[in-house]
Length: 350
Image 1 (tube, rainbow, N blue to C red):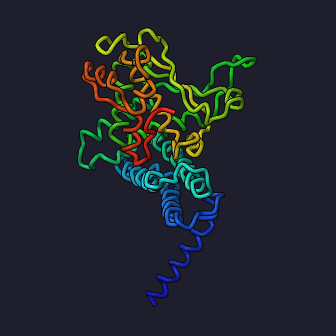
Image 2: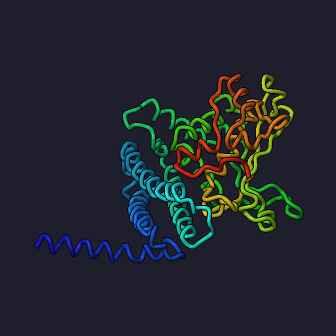
Image 3: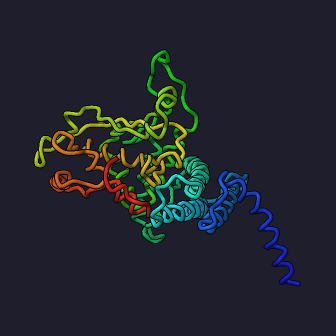
């Protein structure tokens, strides 16, 4: 009888999962990656249940530690799902090809990203909680406290300030706010904070020395600009607010440093980031690339005056390494961010 009950239970689970599997991606899973689709679909189902519980009436009666433990489960579940996909792209020589197999995998990433937005919205409304640090031990109270402090600064707009209003364009001197942009950017920050190098990058740019004047201002592109150029071609862009102060004069002469404005499209799906010749470039990774530029600008070590700043940001250059060493800073590159998320490297700037 017990075996029959278990079988019935398994059948019920299968029936509930089947509609979800059909809804996760519009593209039929390729047979060779069907196991990835099945795994991610199961993880999304688990995440949906946890998110639903965090939105229930009973949530308000939970203690902060209980909420944190619950939110860690959501973060870990979503992280496991998306990194299953990243590993596939990293291990597959054909990951850069434009085909149904890769399209379906990128649609899985969009499904994870959608749940991640719900996750950070719950984090934002739950005082005293922070996103999960996947490489932080549960008993490392110091590292957990540092993560919490950095997250609080991000949410409070200290060091990195996000506006949901685009810059004026043409006949639109006062553009309307773009709903959900703040959530999109919180999600990008939370995903960067989940690993050590991204966490150090965000921590530096939100440090207490920037409390009264944001080091990074984040704004969405105006919808008219996005319509004219396209999200993938626009990607994200970092512009120094004082280029002479951002650019080093030589490898042993950093400048005073400058703040930066980062522009990024609203409603940017993870499937939309990869340009031709790239396998996968989720939004948070594109944003992280621009934050590396912003860090160079902050410390006056942008090498554009005498070297290739883009190469310095993607994979590193000798001149950039020397400037970092002179400042006592650890080098951070886009490829290093990709490595800690098990993504294929860019291997250079394109």
